[in-house]
Each structure stands twice: as C-alpha cells, then as structure tokens.
Amino acid sequence: MLYSLLNLPADKLAKIQVIEAEINQPLLAFSEVQASPAQLDRETLAKIRELEEDLGIVLLAVADPNAPVDNKPRRGRLSRRR
Image (cartoon, rainbow, N blue to C red; front, top):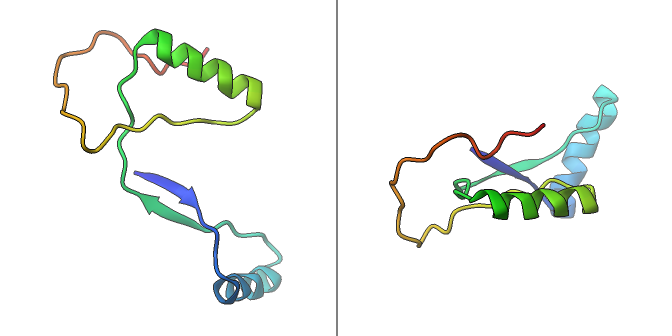
C-alpha cells in the first residue's frame, strides 16, 4: 500500500489544527494511492538513486496500470540500498 500527503481544504485543515493544539503534536494527513512499484532494471534504478541523492528526496517508480503484466521470474533484489 502506498500513501501520499494530502493538500487539504481549509475547513478540514482547521479541524486537524484543533486536535494538534489539544495534543501539542503535529499531524500529517495522508491518502491511499492505488499503485504498484515498477519493476526496474539496474541501470534505471541507478539513475533514479542518483537523482534522489542529488535532490535530497525519495522517488518511487510506479507501474503503469494499463501496461501488460510481465510475469517473468526475476533474479536477485534490485531495491537493495547500501
């Protein structure tokens, strides 16, 4: 399951801010995103990691929901971070 930060309308944000003030703790609002991680080759993964490091952010490649499914067995793990 994936989640994304929400950009809330003012009325909903105000309700959250009331609770934040009561508990003296910031809250983050997320919504569920229907997506699956993309299957990437090592070269593509390396390019994404390089961009992440350059920008200081985290990127997630998601599978195109309209693309045909590739059920070929994969060797090794591509998402290992060192």
